[in-house]
Length: 66
Image 1 (tube, one colour):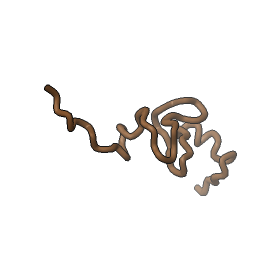
Image 2: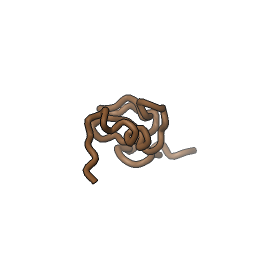
Image 3: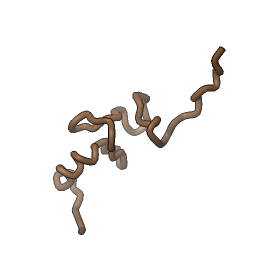
Image 4: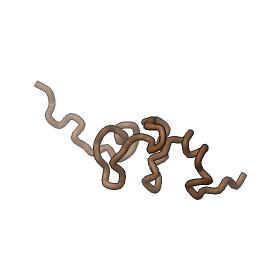
């Protein structure tokens, strides 16, 4: 008989937090541009992967300083 307390703690950070569960600020856990689930930038609820961010940072409104 398995333990009923297994993985009942909410995962707010780390790899388990990027599953298919719904979060308060972001419903998608994949890139908005290319649908990749790895390398997401989730700050400010952008949900864009690193590659798409580097390609589109000027369109989003970010500036490269160095």
